[in-house]
Image 1 (cartoon, rainbow, N blue to C red):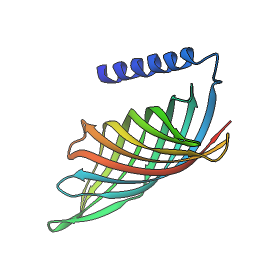
Image 2: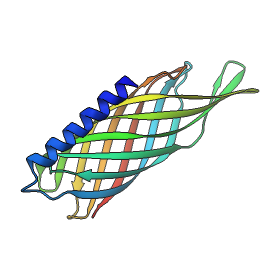
Image 3: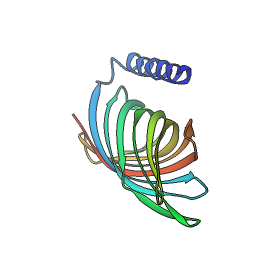
Length: 182
């Protein structure tokens, strides 16, 4: 809980600085985004691969900073281990902070850091089922392209380090999506 409190305080402080530093030259811009995500986890000695969707709600405070909340739902993956099989899927939600570095007209490099709560459903064939719930600390980078003032697309690659998820160590996430700025 202490880690989450520190992260949320840092996120709000960063958002406040970004907003106040550019309040006279940039308007607050809310946005909504939808992504396809592919993730590959390191879990129970195997590497489950999941496909899924992400819904993001965010706000830009300047051309350099934004924050967003996200919700992710994955498909189920099946891996053979020993005499049985391992089926996994997950649901996650959380908060990310993004920093942008405009490179060319309409193109920006981005860096992101965040935290999410990951809920994994795990089934060891034939009978053992359980749920794992813990935190994922997310760090990544990518590229963003603005078609116009409303429509943008982006690609992001993230490393997710899990905390308090038995059997799950880390994951890599690759997402591609579009967003609409109001």
